[in-house]
Figure 1 (tube, helix red, strand yellow):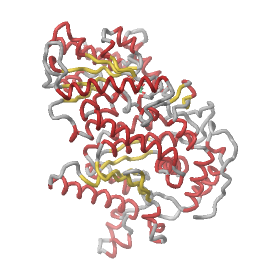
Figure 2 (cartoon, protein in one colour):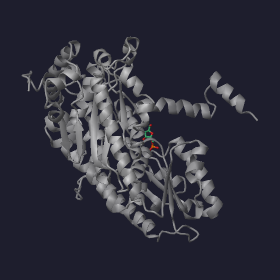
Figure 3 (cartoon, rainbow, N blue to C red):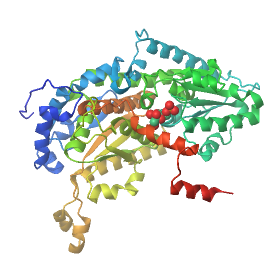
Length: 540
Ligand code: F6P
């Protein structure tokens, strides 16, 4: 490892801008210089591929195709120490107050530890809610849960948006091979009536439960969808419709005000952030879908990753290393977005889940102490599944003027032994590997000429390469490995916030839009020309 400045602790507050750390200044200097290309880095070190990849629980992370020299890596390690990233991850895991602007803890990590004797009352309450969830899930899966008219419950539709939707929807979709064959588990995140109609299509109100999942129980989209769902339930069970409604919320009084029975209400602690909430009662549809044991495996996978993220030294800590690479790419090398490309259809919902997790956590403009971060903060997260993405935006990734770091996520073994699935799985992984190499190493003009390409085409066909990517490999997609992957990214996000001195757990920026929408909806604010025109076009 190159000899780097090991002044590990500048003794400066970590709630302010990152440029207070000496390592940050060193990195700025390196970023202004000329970095060796990925092709050069691999040619000069035959061990790079193994030296810069790490095992992390059941995942394997490959950072070798990132612009990391020994010197850069050394200063990044120092930065993590100087910004006390591990302290933050440990505080989260122990449920300490880490959300300063709302004076709250973030106890999602505490909820999934295996410590069934928690000290904090809200964690204790959450464990009691898990027991309440398990009782319902077990009865539905056993066929003993009956609706108001005596029909067996065979469907559950969760209404919710953002963190009240994306995590559970991802888990049920990714683990569909484990979903009870007699149950329909659906989700409707939006206020659009078409969205709810699609979720309810083909279901029978007499055998369907509707979950109104809203931490605040004030989200207009969810409450509007609930009104529609209750009207639909009433077509089958009449005035007993409310008996088919469950609530998952941190505001049980509001659920009660909507007539939802107290014993149909599953409470979420206020200290569980929405985008971190799949391991709370928000995950009720997941537990119903895959069963209590498999849901526990999901939580155990998350907990395993939490412990590794809090305890491992920086050099072996996947969550912290991924965060350091994100900061290096975005804050120092000016790469403003990250493309996320899971080469697995079952991980297609990983992208929107990560978009909320990362951009709602890191899309901030001040540090904990209200000061200017004096650097870029949240990167734009976008993507699509591979190989579809290869036929959509990989042209830009290979030859565009923007250098976009890409996260390539692969699953080595399919969920079934079906020979067709195995063949497809090999094709997916082969394409993932090929794209990583093509982006990293490209094809030079001389190589094209040597291949006999006509001179007038050489410029058009030259692939510059030197495009960074990270490989993330799962052996197979199980409740445990999905939990590990999700927690890895939660911890990557929290670690990035710690590096930058920002609060990942609040989201003040979304409030103004909601308020204006409410004022426009009740006509207490002057309508814009756009709104006036839209309304005029809708006049019957
Ligand atoms: O997008 C803002 C937000 O508050 C998210 O943080 C949250 O996950 C979502 O809206 C839904 O909020 P609730 O669960 O309170 O309905």
